[in-house]
Amino acid sequence: MPERRPLRVVHTSDVHLGAYSLSKDTAWDSRRNLMERAFSRVIDLGREVHAHALLIAGDFFDNDRVPQHTIDFAAEELRRFGGPVFLLSGNHDPMDEGRIYARNPLDELVPGLRMFRSHAGESFEIPGADAVVWGRGYLESDWHFRPLHGLPARSGERWHIAMAHGHFVRADSDRHRSLLIEQHEIEAAAGDCDYIALGHWEPHADVSAGGMTAVYSGAPLALSDANQKAGWAAVVDFDGDGVRWALRRVDPREGIGP
Picture (cartoon, rainbow, N blue to C red):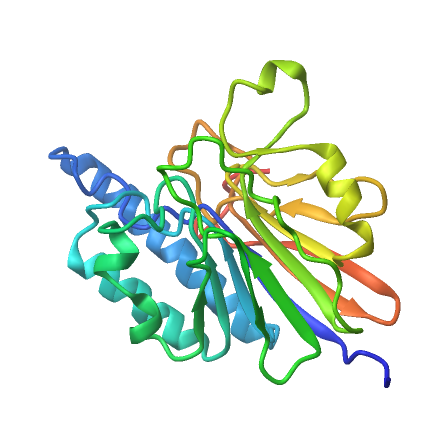
């Protein structure tokens, strides 16, 4: 088989569009607007670097009752990207019946958008690329959800990307949390996957292990400035030299953050 063609994707997560929309305190309006501007900069980045696809690793929306203008903004920005988008649900925007994506099927509004609705997991090809993306649809009703459970074996010589929204276990004290991702799960994926696009943490983090590249992109903008380690998106390149990623600043404010 010919060599896999080079691939470039932009990876983001925890966008939390519509945050604070249920609050009657108008002081949060400016924060919500900043978060929208940060996501617009993710779209700008994807267009600037000519990304083959955009990966959104969960918590695209902040809650189940975001206003219609937030849904419209999200659809407009995703259409503006102009390429394939892969959207994973998170704990803030689950795939349960009657929840936000059931009432607002973005994949009917945005050409090229693929949503991971299957609880068992499903894979989609990136059109025009030698690549496949896998993920599981999160259901809030599943209290024991494991984001990487059921990751399929590699099929063919394409680039394989997994998306997972969950908490990486760094110590035994983390085990009371939900949506757990164990180091041994990341290590075990090394033969079947080339990159794991993670979400659930607002700060960026590299949790690669056992030769498996696994990265939290970090949020485009944190929910509050108490978190100074957000404001990024990741540009990920796949080619004959392997997989490389680099953070790009998308916080719309100058001189903010590290």
